[in-house]
Length: 201
Ligand SMILES: N[C@@H](CCC(=O)N[C@@H](CS)C(=O)NCC(=O)O)C(=O)O
Image 1 (spheres, rainbow, N blue to C red):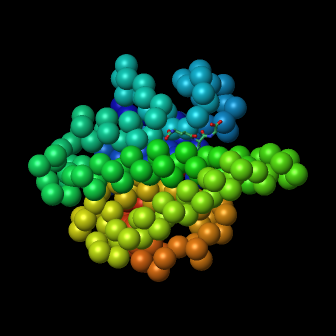
Image 2: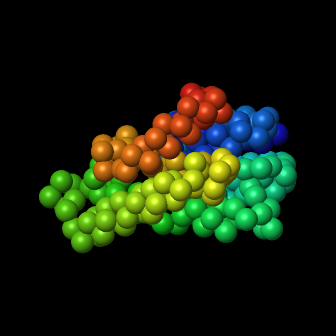
């Protein structure tokens, strides 16, 4: 049985959303917070998500998604290498965490956790600028296509939506997003699988 270590409103949503889109059976392991001893035992970093599937344990959200699509696919959520949408797919799939997620993490720490007098520094400003530039790059793609990889919804959309949603909800930045990005965010978060996943506890 697929087990997903879960805290609502975190990157675990990527995994649960994907599982819902694929119609996979899974079990949530609700965590009592980032200091839950069960989480530390499964992942020394104490970060969410963690996936267990029999003897398999994976602790990176995009690696978990790739694992589920490869092991339990094929699925149209992951275009084949010969598909014309594949290059954009693979770029935006990783963009969601490597470019956006890395900056998002810095911003969460800087804006919500460190003492107020230390929040404004070079690294925070750089992360904010990079995050907003990333949103603009997605906007350029979304002015031409309904989804990030092209005309079909894929795991790249799941990967990036988490960050677009996080910037909007946590920092109130939706008004800095292009209209094409706002329309897209509304469209993808109206998907039934997203709604089931975001309500999962
Ligand atoms: N690159 C990792 C990042 C995981 C991560 O930072 N998750 C956040 C929640 S969204 C977390 O666990 N933060 C608490 C911590 O790292 O202590 C992934 O994509 O899985």
